[in-house]
Length: 153
Image (cartoon, rainbow, N blue to C red; front, top):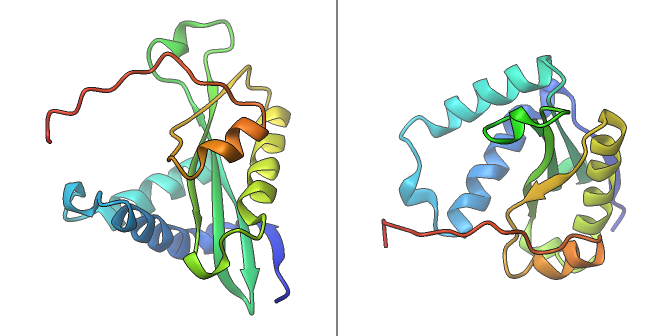
């Protein structure tokens, strides 16, 4: 299996959105998605790409995307009040099940972190699944102070 790694172009946004929907479905979040989620995500990602506030790194085999990691620049409250006004966010981390445990996610995450570092962010945040937590610990991430209370359960 030959895997090629590359950064995404705007033409890759549609299949990236499809993989994001697949990922959300796998984790049981599809029931919470807006009926127009695919279109909303597609529009958001196009806007973010045009503003150079997001990119994705891809793993492909036979010209088919098998893994993705997204790097985003965010400036929400309260972080927009900090001296840099923005931070990095890792999201859309997904590898098709049959290609897992081959180091794909680790390689893509390293590319995303390099892009964020070059952008000049002061720190990077993410939401880690139980399966992803060991990868992020190896990359130097530590638990944060975020706490969650789910009302929908």
